[in-house]
Length: 283
Image 1 (cartoon, rainbow, N blue to C red):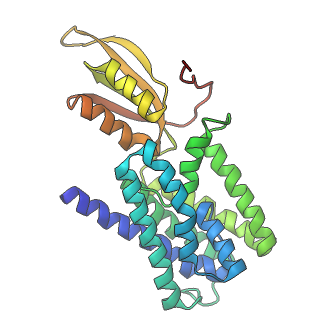
Image 2: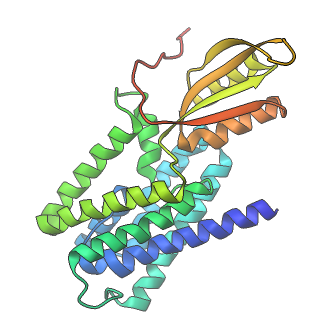
Image 3: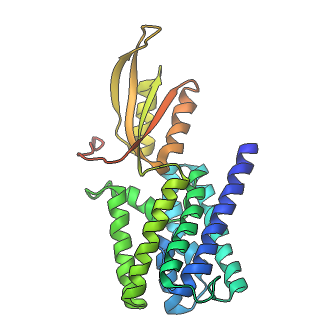
């Protein structure tokens, strides 16, 4: 119970910080974020409809998509965070009335400080097991169909969004939006202690075949078995090894611990992944 209370507390704080950065720095300066939030901000500028509505509606299909592969806990936390974020932008919009928190703030400073605050909020949410943007979920699924990594797909999506922002606003504000995105991305890395897109996972267990099978079937992730020997016991074991995205970590832990509560799991950051992913055999 204490863990859940802590998670909800930080998810709420992170989502509200994100909302504050959007309404206090980015919206008044006509600077946009990447991903679903960026698309929502563009649609808000074109239609005048509330930003919070677009955030929830556009993210909803991605949340449903994540339910099967990323687990109920992640999906519920993500949905909760997005609702808090949408409510936060609505609340801060009424409180600030479309004005920047610091009057006459230069665009560069708005981009930098907006990115810092935004990245801190998103980092808190990710660190506590949720997400605020459906494009990352979509990118995980897209990697199964096209030969690009999650990071490359997100980069392509955001490049399209920032280009679109150049037509909706102007190219100066689109370029400042890129600065904000870069600052936010680096701040996120600091807040979540270097959490990267990909993680390499080693699982030492007496139930390697069953855990490996469940990972492949329930997560559609390829695994490799490595023969090993216990240093103290001298017992022969098979290590389960795989590479997953950061959003899949919780799901993998649940699979392994449900089969073997004593399983030893080591997770490391992967800075670059290359090579061909072996697909499941079609019978």
